[in-house]
Image (cartoon, rainbow, N blue to C red; front, side, top):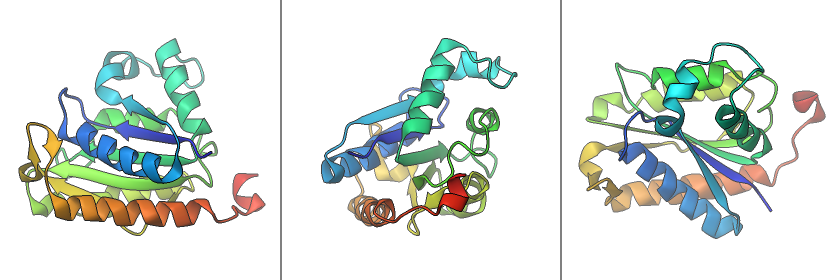
Amino acid sequence: MARIVGISGSLTQPSRTKALVEEIAANASHKLHSPVEIIDIAQIATVLGSTISYGDFPEVLAAAYKKLQEADLIIIASPVYKASYTGLLKHFFDLLDPKVLAGKVAILAATGGSDQHALVVDYQLRTLASFFNIYTTPTAIYAKDAEFTDYQLTSESIRNRVNVAVDQALFLLKQEVPQSLVA
Protein backbone atom coordinates (compact mmCIF):
# COMPACT_ATOMS: atom_id res chain seq x y z
CA MET A 1 0.00 0.00 0.00
CA ALA A 2 1.39 3.39 -1.00
CA ARG A 3 1.70 6.08 1.63
CA ILE A 4 0.40 9.51 0.59
CA VAL A 5 1.49 12.74 2.27
CA GLY A 6 0.30 16.17 1.22
CA ILE A 7 2.10 19.37 2.19
CA SER A 8 0.18 22.63 2.19
CA GLY A 9 2.59 25.56 2.19
CA SER A 10 -0.12 28.08 3.01
CA LEU A 11 0.32 30.25 6.07
CA THR A 12 -3.40 30.83 6.62
CA GLN A 13 -6.46 28.87 7.67
CA PRO A 14 -8.78 28.32 5.91
CA SER A 15 -6.71 27.92 2.77
CA ARG A 16 -7.42 27.34 -0.90
CA THR A 17 -4.01 25.67 -1.13
CA LYS A 18 -4.89 23.18 1.58
CA ALA A 19 -8.24 22.54 -0.13
CA LEU A 20 -6.36 21.79 -3.37
CA VAL A 21 -3.97 19.43 -1.55
CA GLU A 22 -6.96 17.65 -0.02
CA GLU A 23 -8.61 17.35 -3.46
CA ILE A 24 -5.48 15.81 -4.98
CA ALA A 25 -4.97 13.57 -1.95
CA ALA A 26 -8.56 12.34 -2.03
CA ASN A 27 -8.25 11.41 -5.69
CA ALA A 28 -4.97 9.57 -5.08
CA SER A 29 -6.33 7.89 -1.96
CA HIS A 30 -9.36 6.64 -3.87
CA LYS A 31 -7.24 5.18 -6.67
CA LEU A 32 -4.53 3.72 -4.42
CA HIS A 33 -6.84 2.64 -1.58
CA SER A 34 -4.41 4.34 0.77
CA PRO A 35 -4.80 6.70 3.71
CA VAL A 36 -3.56 10.27 3.48
CA GLU A 37 -1.73 12.48 5.92
CA ILE A 38 -1.54 16.24 5.48
CA ILE A 39 1.29 18.42 6.74
CA ASP A 40 -0.17 21.91 7.12
CA ILE A 41 2.57 24.55 7.35
CA ALA A 42 0.05 26.96 8.91
CA GLN A 43 -0.36 24.59 11.88
CA ILE A 44 3.36 24.21 12.50
CA ALA A 45 4.47 27.71 11.46
CA THR A 46 5.53 28.96 14.89
CA VAL A 47 7.62 25.90 15.69
CA LEU A 48 9.01 25.66 12.15
CA GLY A 49 9.98 29.33 12.00
CA SER A 50 11.98 29.14 15.21
CA THR A 51 13.81 25.93 14.27
CA ILE A 52 17.23 26.55 12.81
CA SER A 53 19.26 23.46 13.64
CA TYR A 54 19.39 20.29 11.57
CA GLY A 55 18.37 17.05 13.19
CA ASP A 56 17.36 18.54 16.55
CA PHE A 57 13.69 19.03 15.81
CA PRO A 58 10.79 19.75 18.13
CA GLU A 59 8.40 16.79 18.31
CA VAL A 60 5.81 18.23 15.90
CA LEU A 61 8.48 18.79 13.22
CA ALA A 62 10.12 15.42 13.79
CA ALA A 63 6.72 13.77 13.27
CA ALA A 64 6.12 15.75 10.05
CA TYR A 65 9.54 14.83 8.65
CA LYS A 66 9.01 11.16 9.57
CA LYS A 67 5.69 11.15 7.66
CA LEU A 68 7.36 12.75 4.66
CA GLN A 69 10.30 10.34 4.65
CA GLU A 70 7.94 7.34 4.83
CA ALA A 71 5.73 8.62 1.99
CA ASP A 72 5.66 7.06 -1.44
CA LEU A 73 3.61 9.85 -3.02
CA ILE A 74 4.05 13.46 -1.94
CA ILE A 75 1.79 16.33 -2.88
CA ILE A 76 3.64 19.63 -2.60
CA ALA A 77 1.55 22.79 -2.88
CA SER A 78 1.93 26.46 -2.06
CA PRO A 79 0.15 29.71 -2.60
CA VAL A 80 2.17 32.10 -4.76
CA TYR A 81 3.76 34.92 -2.76
CA LYS A 82 5.98 37.42 -4.58
CA ALA A 83 6.45 35.11 -7.59
CA SER A 84 7.48 32.08 -5.51
CA TYR A 85 6.33 29.56 -2.94
CA THR A 86 6.11 30.56 0.72
CA GLY A 87 9.24 31.15 2.76
CA LEU A 88 8.18 28.73 5.49
CA LEU A 89 7.65 25.98 2.93
CA LYS A 90 11.20 26.67 1.73
CA HIS A 91 12.43 26.59 5.33
CA PHE A 92 10.62 23.28 5.89
CA PHE A 93 12.56 21.75 3.00
CA ASP A 94 15.81 23.53 3.92
CA LEU A 95 15.95 21.54 7.17
CA LEU A 96 15.78 18.18 5.36
CA ASP A 97 18.74 16.02 4.44
CA PRO A 98 18.82 16.19 0.61
CA LYS A 99 19.02 12.38 0.29
CA VAL A 100 15.92 11.36 2.26
CA LEU A 101 13.38 12.04 -0.50
CA ALA A 102 15.33 10.57 -3.43
CA GLY A 103 13.21 8.33 -5.62
CA LYS A 104 9.85 9.44 -4.26
CA VAL A 105 7.05 10.62 -6.55
CA ALA A 106 5.43 14.05 -6.25
CA ILE A 107 2.52 15.97 -7.65
CA LEU A 108 3.17 19.71 -7.67
CA ALA A 109 0.49 22.34 -7.23
CA ALA A 110 0.03 26.02 -6.50
CA THR A 111 -2.71 28.57 -6.03
CA GLY A 112 -2.71 32.23 -6.88
CA GLY A 113 -4.72 35.24 -7.85
CA SER A 114 -4.08 35.27 -11.60
CA ASP A 115 -2.69 33.27 -14.50
CA GLN A 116 0.58 35.19 -14.44
CA HIS A 117 1.66 33.12 -11.40
CA ALA A 118 1.13 29.72 -13.01
CA LEU A 119 4.78 29.16 -13.94
CA VAL A 120 5.76 29.04 -10.26
CA VAL A 121 4.98 25.34 -10.33
CA ASP A 122 7.53 24.61 -13.06
CA TYR A 123 10.16 27.22 -12.29
CA GLN A 124 10.13 27.02 -8.50
CA LEU A 125 8.49 23.84 -7.15
CA ARG A 126 9.81 21.53 -9.88
CA THR A 127 13.32 22.86 -9.24
CA LEU A 128 12.91 22.19 -5.51
CA ALA A 129 11.73 18.62 -6.19
CA SER A 130 14.58 18.07 -8.62
CA PHE A 131 17.13 19.10 -5.99
CA PHE A 132 15.80 16.30 -3.78
CA ASN A 133 15.80 13.78 -6.68
CA ILE A 134 12.03 13.45 -6.53
CA TYR A 135 10.22 12.21 -9.63
CA THR A 136 7.47 14.67 -10.53
CA THR A 137 4.42 14.14 -12.67
CA PRO A 138 4.56 15.94 -16.02
CA THR A 139 1.19 17.51 -15.24
CA ALA A 140 1.24 20.11 -12.51
CA ILE A 141 -1.80 21.88 -11.09
CA TYR A 142 -2.27 25.61 -10.80
CA ALA A 143 -5.61 26.92 -9.57
CA LYS A 144 -6.66 30.56 -9.42
CA ASP A 145 -8.57 31.96 -6.48
CA ALA A 146 -11.63 32.30 -8.76
CA GLU A 147 -11.74 28.51 -9.09
CA PHE A 148 -12.74 28.17 -5.44
CA THR A 149 -15.90 29.08 -3.57
CA ASP A 150 -15.74 29.27 0.22
CA TYR A 151 -12.31 27.60 0.09
CA GLN A 152 -13.61 24.61 -1.87
CA LEU A 153 -12.48 23.78 -5.39
CA THR A 154 -15.32 24.31 -7.87
CA SER A 155 -13.48 24.07 -11.21
CA GLU A 156 -14.06 20.94 -13.28
CA SER A 157 -11.06 21.75 -15.49
CA ILE A 158 -8.80 21.74 -12.41
CA ARG A 159 -10.38 18.48 -11.23
CA ASN A 160 -9.57 17.03 -14.65
CA ARG A 161 -5.91 18.12 -14.27
CA VAL A 162 -5.86 16.55 -10.82
CA ASN A 163 -7.12 13.30 -12.30
CA VAL A 164 -4.43 13.33 -15.01
CA ALA A 165 -1.66 14.15 -12.51
CA VAL A 166 -2.77 11.37 -10.16
CA ASP A 167 -2.84 8.86 -13.04
CA GLN A 168 0.70 9.94 -13.96
CA ALA A 169 1.78 9.53 -10.33
CA LEU A 170 0.33 6.00 -10.31
CA PHE A 171 2.40 5.19 -13.39
CA LEU A 172 5.57 6.59 -11.77
CA LEU A 173 4.94 4.67 -8.55
CA LYS A 174 4.98 1.40 -10.52
CA GLN A 175 8.48 2.08 -11.86
CA GLU A 176 11.55 0.61 -10.21
CA VAL A 177 13.81 3.25 -8.69
CA PRO A 178 17.49 2.76 -9.66
CA GLN A 179 19.61 1.86 -6.63
CA SER A 180 22.18 4.50 -7.56
CA LEU A 181 19.56 7.14 -6.86
CA VAL A 182 18.69 6.00 -3.35
CA ALA A 183 22.14 4.83 -2.28
